[in-house]
Amino acid sequence: MTEQTNKNFVQWNEAMALKYNPENYYKSHNFIIRFIENLRKKTIIKMLNPQNDDKIIELGCGAGNLMEAIKSARELVGIDLSDFLLNLARSKKYFVNTKLIKGNIENLPEEIVNDKFDKIYCSEVLEHVEHPEQVLKEIKKIIKKNGILIVSIPNENLINKFKDILIKFKIFNLLFPNLSVRMTDEWHIHLFNLLKFKNLIANDYSVIKISRIPLKLIPLRYVIKLKIKYA
Image 1 (cartoon, rainbow, N blue to C red):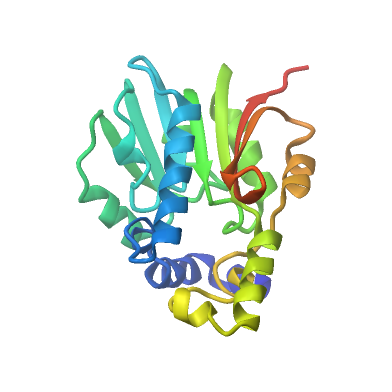
Image 2 (cartoon, one colour; image 1 turned 180 degrees about the vertical axis):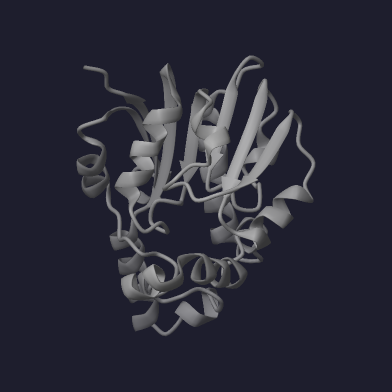
């Protein structure tokens, strides 16, 4: 996987975006998938608490499914590497002034680096990039001193345990016919859990709040609110 992505990450990412279109998850016929994805979206928006004077950016905005749910902001910016997903995002209607930019969030375009944002969010993205630690460094360049960062990650170990149980009873393909058995075999370059994420951000960010999706006892997703540390 790593060798493949280093050779042509953009082309590989585009192929994965076409195969695993996020629109299909938010609008899935499978109630479980649709419920979890929409609960994650609602949780992020609640933590973000967008206000009319906020300048907000989504890193890895995909098809704009989260952006279209934001009803208050001075300006909303989305950046993504996929032309396919950006075209989907451009087809949507937004409540606030919105700008969509093509770019790699490991090396933000100059027009973004020269700006500062009140609130930043990055949802189910860090597992897809080559160097998650570089994304977090880039965020430090664009976040305001009292700004907040919202990150969501899949709890891959627990997800895989549930998949193994369903496979054992031969009902995985019946319930989730279009889902990969292991996303780390496909679009997920990194396998995250809460401890790994906390270690990743420990030097630069403080955790304010953690929400577990869909339930505390079944944390298939983590939504984490952060603030940057200053010396």
